Image 1 (cartoon, rainbow, N blue to C red):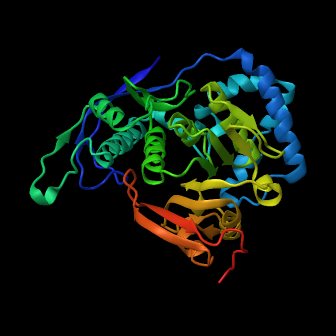
Image 2 (cartoon, one colour):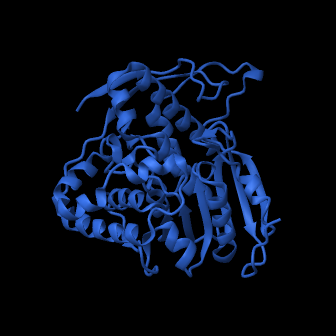
Image 3 (cartoon, helix red, strand yellow):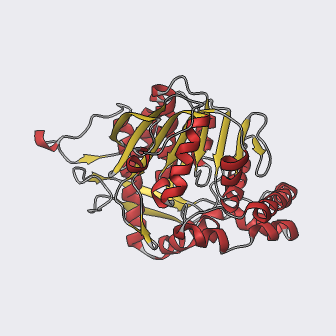
Length: 378
């Protein structure tokens, strides 16, 4: 297994400008053996997703997601060639399967071939780890107004402290096929895994009455993985059918109990994966919390407004962790969540603060008022 020793500390625009972190880190690409026992599961999954695509398509997803939803016909391949698709998904984080919502093949190729790409990821990952340790009080916050010295960090020591501060297992997922990450005594960690640990901890600590969570846009399934570790056993992911296939595979490989409800009502505990069509048109279900991390800004305005209107009928709180840069997004610009939420009279924002783990991101909590009444648009 090829590994890379990377020395951090070089300037990086995505790392907090106040921090000059120095560390020698080992990074490598995750390698997992193919689990041939999943061939039948993959064939079944392909049939379910193909049927949902036939019924409802990929809903309205916007320009940025068009390539993700149309580039690869994995559902049909899964039906006809499940062993081939199993092998592809075994390296999902270095393949086109995760392009656009996780590492993907283009980034993986750059990481294998260029030192600058590896150094960039190393700096971002270490910054996330140090920020997580600060957020949990494991280490003090640096303050250069008071002449704070340059800091040198040992990732394993930080992770030991984080594990002591968090009352669930923070080790990395055993399956992380093809992902480039920081090799530690707690497994192969990345910016996304460390962020998911913090969000699961945050919900447990600061929203203690939350027991059921619905995540809009679940990425690879990492957040559901750590929420499950944190004791949440009634979880739902709403995502595009093709992305849901990746989530189902990732969670299954990591021994998470999956209930597939891609085109039928929810029932039972575990992680349920449903499509936007089911969520918006057919679902009659309630959750304590609607969660969105780093995806609302990339969706069309009307789609996000529809999601937030629907939240008034099915959720008690909304937790949004997103950026507000309003950058170019295909033929449009990315939206800002507060602008959309401000048009809906039943969303009462009760928290807004910078997000500890990622510069330029804001954490907001909205309380849904007068549940059961129709949400008005102002």
